[in-house]
Length: 284
Image (cartoon, rainbow, N blue to C red; front, top):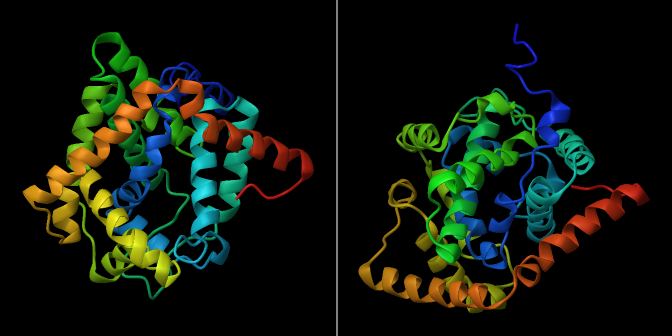
């Protein structure tokens, strides 16, 4: 049995300082949100769990605005919230996750409360926010690299992932990441689900026609090559040139504006979470 020094209590996990990691919550992060979803769902258990979810109110393809608010609120709470904020949001998410589990018809076994799957989701979130931070602020090096990484464990501990499941340091995380990426698989069923999301297929036809191509191109652009291969999509040098220019414009904007302005949307969502708690309204 783990001793107190070996295992963090839930209260200690919720009280993790995330001041440096919180600086990765930038407005341009919204441009890579769909790519991060694809990365998470490239794990077959997560992919089928989301694509076949029976929790109607939380389905991304049917309630995209609500799901986007929930996800962004989760990130705001994890990185900027207090221990009480994290505890309350975890309880709300758990009420949804406990309903998501495989049945006899499922191609793979899954359970949204499985901490191993939560570790993978948290790793994808961390990978994405580190990517955004480094694009804007430059490479993380020295003590800052490790501090940022250790604070990033809030991506998982705000769920049910025990803190000790988070790889011990950034180098070990890279080993975990490479091992898991080597195992990713995207079936035809999950691929169709993901491409529909990437193309704005769930939106009004006029919105899909106008914004779908750009959303698709930037989504594929953010994906590491292994995920593009698993998704079986083409990515050309011309696509990469377009993506580099697209992202650079966002990076330039982020560097010009103060952090508080870039984070205004996340801070508003954190305020909304706290207001919902006081009014007894659902968080997810």
